[in-house]
Image 1: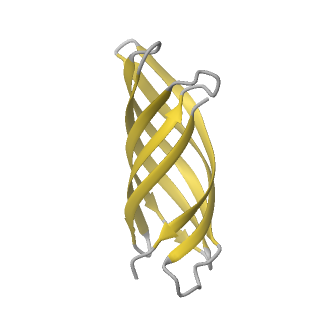
Image 2 (image 1 turned 60 degrees about the horizontal axis):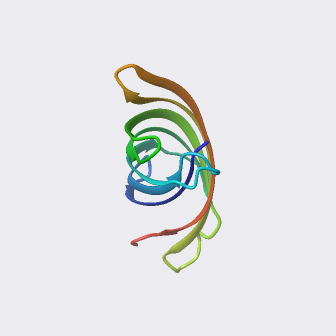
Length: 130
């Protein structure tokens, strides 16, 4: 199981959302080995009041060090639910909560590929240039 802390920057319109993501995490919580993962994600936004449902497509890559020693690539499709608690405030920081589930393929080499299930629960701040 992977655990990540992530920052992202992106552009959001009424119907689409695209972002670049940079994360720092662990392949296994007990391993103690940190690694980075860089990705890009595009999503179609289905809006409700302060919430949106976002079917997304994500590509990411990373490099794990010793003892794993490999570069991996991930392609994932899923659905993300985002709730913006403070969307109606006048300040440019919005408190957001999101959760999602996705399925993907991780490629660690020509002969080492496997499917995975991704789920996430996120709490964060979103800065909006208004």
